[in-house]
Length: 483
Image (cartoon, rainbow, N blue to C red; front, side):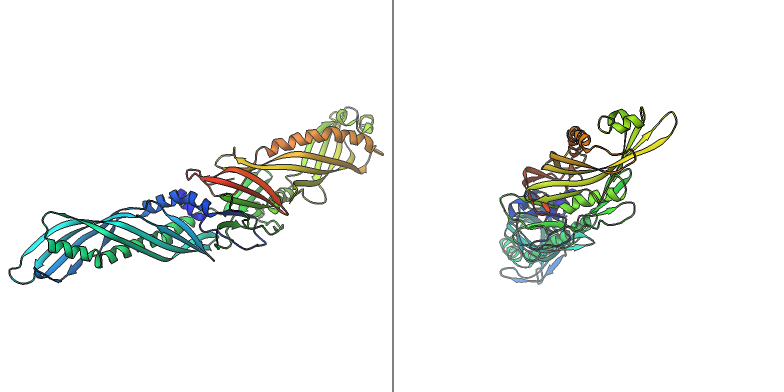
């Protein structure tokens, strides 16, 4: 049931027509896109709808031909409920409307009548009633409770009509006619009311109970740095489309400290040409980097040798022949920063590289120098199927350009010729580019609803955000995403 309920989430998690400053991720579904969930929602309601038993009815009508009788209707059961299809519409500010036609069911009951006056004739039997028409309309208001979507039915109306009666055993025409009148009035009203109440209960209880079980905090990383992704939903609304939105808050798993970076405004759906549009604020990626930054996970220590450095810094070979050299890399000025604008994606970062020589024979260590490397990196980004376990969609990137400059921050070995370091940069740039691409090839999981697979996605950029337009398929067998 959990897999089916997830399909209902898209009917609830909305932030339409607003530009909340704390929204880090938005997914907008067009009317065409909502229809992708029709089959799953129909299956869910059909599965949850159990047989209904109506109260016994005891009547004492006076009828032509037979006169005054008592009529007992017992064991009245509604069964065989089945919805073939449904349609959606939305009403601002937060209402989802569902229309259903040709709903199937049947009503089974036992009957017993007895003439009140002499000669006290009586008879009994059973019948099955099958409506030829079964229409259901319902509306539900969407809100959030405990950071999760919630539905409350505002109206539910049923109309089961044009009923065929099938008697078992003996029956008289006057009995048939009276039963037909009951199924156009008293019994029909009871059936309509019972089905409406059952569907209301499914939405208000079964659906919401499952929605409250949804995880809204995920974890990513390991080793020196682990972060929390909080996808609690903040508000709900609806217009001509449905929009899923959340803060996508990121915090340090170890300390609980929240990322201080605040996302800028994200746009609303700007085209119904696709079934879904995703918007991701650049702050989400920068917050992920921030956690690594404050935990020192971006700090690296790289083992090298004097023979590697001596062509670029000759003093190293003269002063520390045969020594090993550790290069301690730490960010300076601040964390690496990802920027999205209309031209695409780029990364700017500055690091300090501290070079220290170590003599294995004497055990002596000698500080050599500290170099500053500033890098500007251009990225090409796209969306594709994920290779990670239980993740449907991932964002991939490829370094298309890299420009590194170097300066000497400090030196204990005399003046260092920047021209020879430029030679080092020319050699290092393609190596760094290849290294970064090997990491980016893993992909960054996108927080789409579990079970959604994107088709023919295209990536576009705006100031402060990345957008993805695509069609999609819903695969309820896909497990919930766990990064």
